[in-house]
Image (cartoon, rainbow, N blue to C red; front, side, top):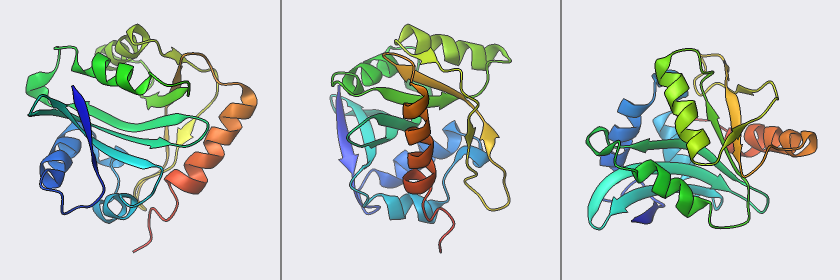
Length: 177
């Protein structure tokens, strides 16, 4: 298993990866395409293709700074799911000392409860903070999500730093044309 970084939209796998992204997330959870291309050059943004030997099996989009790794989007190709690729990718990102942070929909139905269970089996725990992810589209509103972290919960101060980072770095210029 290996990760391959994409830093430019001219990468030969960029369009295929973007198609996986678009079928894996509802529109309101997807970045605008121009925004996605713009952030590829950000030194803290990682648009990583997931390979099993030479086979493309998924995509993990995350931000890494000196304090934590924030997993913004993560998906495995539909035909490759339930083969432990997700667990293995998360384990790769967890090898360092930094906490990992991700967001999930509140667990209110079978799919969202299964997703939460998957992340719990991978060592993530939910956090008690009210969390709303900012809107990705001007016509949309932010959406309430559950914050999960590994290996432990965030302190209140760390949660505040993450929230500022999300607003000031991750979502910076989201709507700039």
